[in-house]
Image 1 (tube, helix red, strand yellow):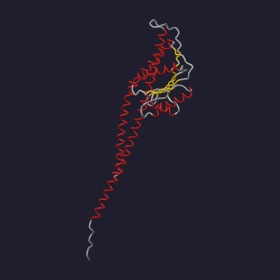
Image 2 (cartoon, one colour):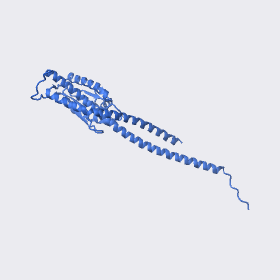
Image 3 (tube, helix red, strand yellow):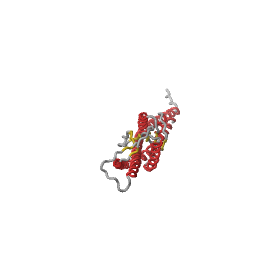
Image 4 (cartoon, helix red, strand yellow):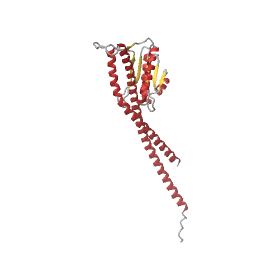
Length: 279
């Protein structure tokens, strides 16, 4: 009876956990579909801004200070492997660049970096849906430019994941600053704004769309990784529940058999002894 009660409790626990994982998978699937639809338009817009910046010849020069690094990780659970890949790429890049300021999006990635000896100067809570990306992008742009100008940094790189499909999210390193675009020959000057104002607007837009594009990609990668993880967890829980269910059924059969044997033994014990025939 004790073993049967233990198996029942374990089966209920597995079923409860399965319901929680299923809810997490549904939520990740919803956010993944939402984010995936925004990935391609962001890429196209960034390509257009790149062309505008190239035509204006806008630039932000390099300083003489150390190089900066922005690491974009995840905030959600069940994304340990995803964060580990990001952190490994960030550590390799930080080692290659040498000492310098490090900014990190995602507390889980920041904790992994700290355990490996790289403490982030600024840590941000990663956005978990499209609604949080705009606010995050504005904060990042302000802090990143502030760090770059105040520290007269020589460069600023971004380590984040690129979304190539479900389960395909390789970490990539992108150079954000400095920016040095050569103006296209033969392009007529704008008749509506001065060249300086146009260059400033182009640089600002390029910075914003680069960060937005990077955050969109990272969010799609994170929800994709969580979706794959929850699907694997669901499969494991289903298999484990089936095993426990079989063990419970076998235990019940053994218990019923034992009860029948005990009843039969009791009946034999209560049966009066057979009378021997007289000669």
